[in-house]
Image 1 (tube, rainbow, N blue to C red):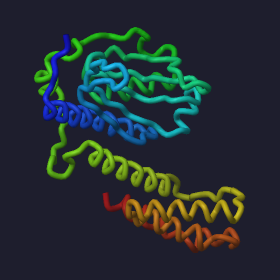
Image 2 (image 1 turned 45 degrees about the vertical axis):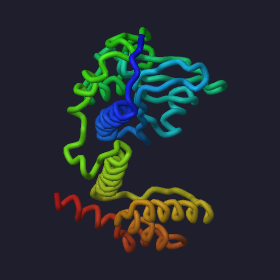
Image 3 (image 1 turned 90 degrees about the horizontal axis):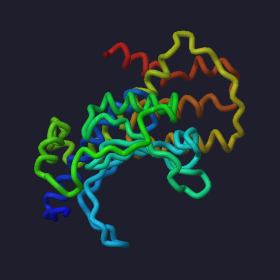
Length: 255
């Protein structure tokens, strides 16, 4: 028999599970994976059947990542009774076509979850197990679970009280670092041939402008300015308009 929780405890369970998911997402971002968000939910009643459900959390990925793994829904889910699983869904009807469990305990370290995802990407059928484990009884011992989740709370709670705020900061910093590393990845930066229609280039510049307005970044602004200045110019323009490269090199030297 599942025990009821107070609204305050349910909210705190959701918050702590969300911070645990954010800690796992940070490790996945460090590994270069295209994570898009984290979600969490405290104990709740299913509106359709009134079924009582335990605390849960999740990590979502880009559509391109999902397309690589069946074309339907694909993501990481954490259940407060069984730990993490990676699920895939059929492209046509969105019905779950596969669920793999790492079998690493209820709260495995983020590096273990990241290693499981890496193993799944290399061999979906061989990663983990299709058998769902049970590490905790549904609806029981919520106080113990709260304590177990406490190590994943942020070091600066005043700045990142909510998991989504913490993830947004991690996401921004991860992608800014990816852009910087891409710009300085090769000393010679050889030219590549990519033919764009004017509308496609304009659309790309609009997206960079949107990214700049959403999350101000000097690299976004400089890269958009460089691309716009090179449009319709000879290849030599790449050497003239390269402010983003110079900014990226400056940042690398500052570390």
